[in-house]
Amino acid sequence: MTQSAYTRAVDVFEALMAVPGRDAHASPAGLIRAAGLPASSGYRHTAALEAEAMLRRDAQGNYLPGASAIRVGLNGFGVGRLAPLVQPILLQLRQSTQLTSFIAIAQDMELRMGPHSVGRDTRGTPVQPSYGFETIPDLVIGQVTEMGLRWFEGNIARRTNVALIPVESSTSDIVMVGLILNSSRGASEMQTRALQQAFEQIEEAEV
View 1 (cartoon, rainbow, N blue to C red):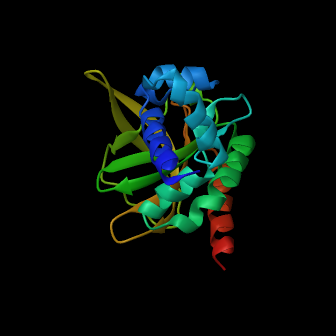
View 2 (view 1 turned 30 degrees about the horizontal axis):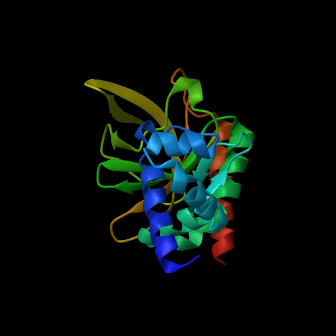
View 3 (view 1 turned 90 degrees about the horizontal axis):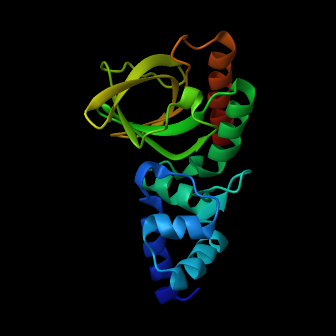
């Protein structure tokens, strides 16, 4: 791909990733329409983004950030080594717990989701781009913590329960793997153990 074509494709990727509500789209046409892109170039650049692994499709055919996008995103937080581990670990968590699994970055009192999550939204709770912690979190690397997160739907405050395990930290950020819990109950022993196993896999990969 030439430099000019690459630049245009990156512009298209940024537009696609900014689709309101982070809706899943199962076709290039759906992505292009949602992003308000011209069809003439949208198809070509969507294909180029797939070829460059900036986009990929899940088992249902929906577009998600690809391996290259995940690597770039995590590199931006100084934890690029986690990129090849994200997808298999989150898939394993999803399969073992049947809950939505995710990777997120904690910055002060905000939890930024992404660049990847796996599984249907638990109990219809959509995964938001960012959340606020209800209380000041006491986060310890390798230790599972349950907490409530706040987000807004219009002017209405909503609450989401999660179980988190911090896996790595930098000077200003903490990277966490987590599960969105059913609101009626906390994390089970099996779910807590699954998160701890995910942490151990990440630790072993570092050796």
